[in-house]
Length: 356
Image (cartoon, rainbow, N blue to C red; front, side, top):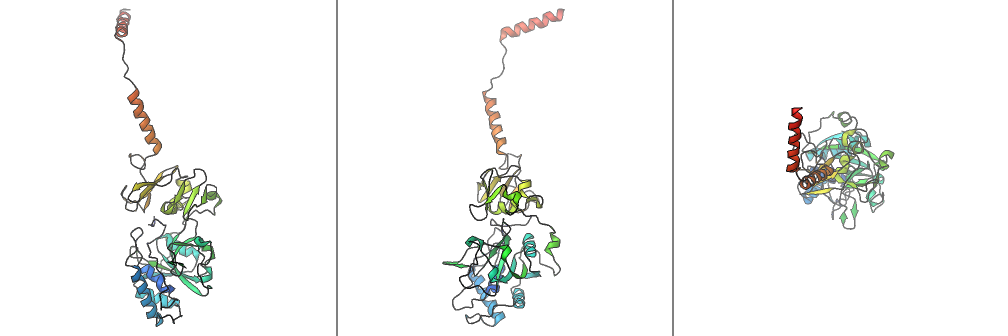
């Protein structure tokens, strides 16, 4: 199971603003690559600092394009992008620019630099609109960092700017409206380097992920109330964050979590230190990146099924109720005693019957 952070991403990223005073506003490729250079293992935070990430982007844009001054509006060619990735010591793999391949790379844990038309970048959190304050033209580069529960993409876009600066990520971009030009998978340090003939669609031929566009799923769940949350129509409970991301792909078959875990019977229940559990009809799962509750061999990912029969947090709450009822009944029940006269009569009957 691919390791994800609490927001469903394959890595932890900084939020970095590519628009620096006196510097070129066309450095999206350099900034996207720098985000990957300073990303961190899921749940452990990014490396370096925002300033280091910004400085590296400025340096490599100037190196590849001759200047990083505001007067330089060249942008960056794909060949310059690939040269820059080598300069940053980032192992990468150029992939066919299709949504299928982008999701396949994310499905095996690699972030993807995607280049495409600015007119195809739609931020669902803003109302499914292009997030730029200027008239979008040309191509733009962003980082695809995960697959949203509804099948759209989680991204980091250093040009998605609001009134107070870059909007915090990940943003959810409309996958159906992307107009891709290139897709480049990045081998982050905690994953193997990428050989030239690696193909994620062969490594993971079929990845089953459910979303709310499926009628069978929409029968039981609706979107919201917040971003990255589903509400169960039958129980009213909410599945969210990393648990929802795993629910949508649990078992990689059938209807995933809906088939293998059933409907949620509780909301997330805090267990301390950021660890939570959630009860479903068929089992109990925990979000526990550090495996503080259970560290059995081979246990994958930050979200995993809890043991049910050891009296721990995974025990079915109905079992605990039954145990309490049995204990109460045992305390109330008086021991059976036989009156002494009845005991004497029973002994007389036994002796008499023995004579005959």
